[in-house]
Amino acid sequence: MNAPAVGTRSAAAEVGGDPLGEQLGSSIPLSEMENNVASTLPALTVGGLYLWLCRRAAIPTALLLAAIYAFGTSMLSTVSRAVWNIGPALVLTNVVLFLLDEHLRPQTRLRTLLTTVGLAILPV
Image (tube, rainbow, N blue to C red; front, side, top):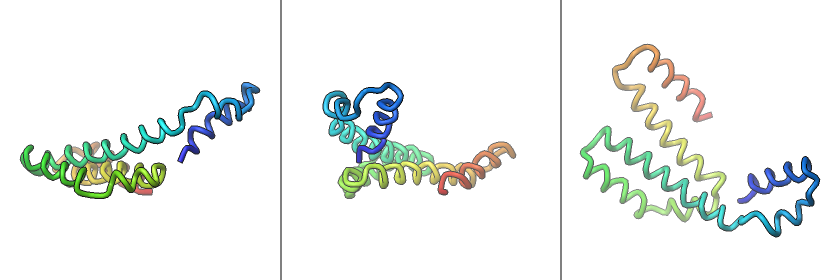
């Protein structure tokens, strides 16, 4: 779960010459970082879903559906168990949904090209 933070500190320890063990024991609040990431990714997902729903439905309906998704599913629990796997996938799924919605709207050639490139790259 904390691989990105530990990897960054490991690389910094190699460059700076500080022992990694001392850094891990004293300066990285790993559990706090994990909780922050495990909370932020679902919040971004719900926010993205709400923004997309606002384009398709009335604001009260969008708010209700986003709240049902946020509190009526096991998303937060699932993300907290697999932070670096499920969380980014949920956020990117919302981005792809938003880009697909944008791609299906009437638009200029440049916007069509940008949304097509986004839809081709992000899912991969």
